[in-house]
Image 1 (cartoon, one colour):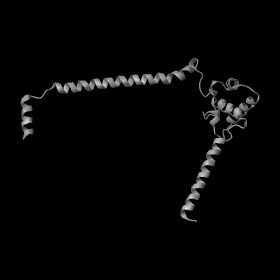
Image 2: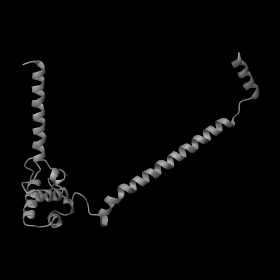
Image 3: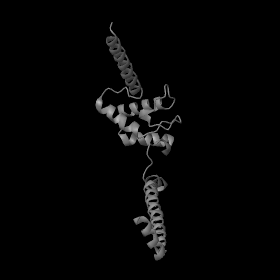
Image 4: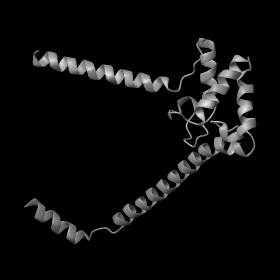
Length: 167
């Protein structure tokens, strides 16, 4: 085997191992549902829920092997999809059992509305503060430049400097 053939074989082997590792990790959080519509519903529902094992990951992407929370929650979602319940009813059943902490995004009502409003409010405050301090800095700089120009050089000294520069 030549060196380039050996290098291409190793490259192919690494590519196969990489693809299979990525594929294996991607399958770990999938459902056992075979109907594409049901699998799509499963993904939509599990994206709305957080795994309760303490990892704070969205249920669909929790990749802990034999997770004591994600596996039963996924089976429960599959069971309820099989029973024909709609997405909101399935999410509501998890909220009834585990509380609002199971939701991946807080509802936009009551105190939880702050989670939606505060980032924008903080951005506005930050932009205002940046504008305020930049304006103050620019104003002080203008005063400093104006103060430097106000102190004019003595005409006799200026004439002497110009004579020396001329030669």
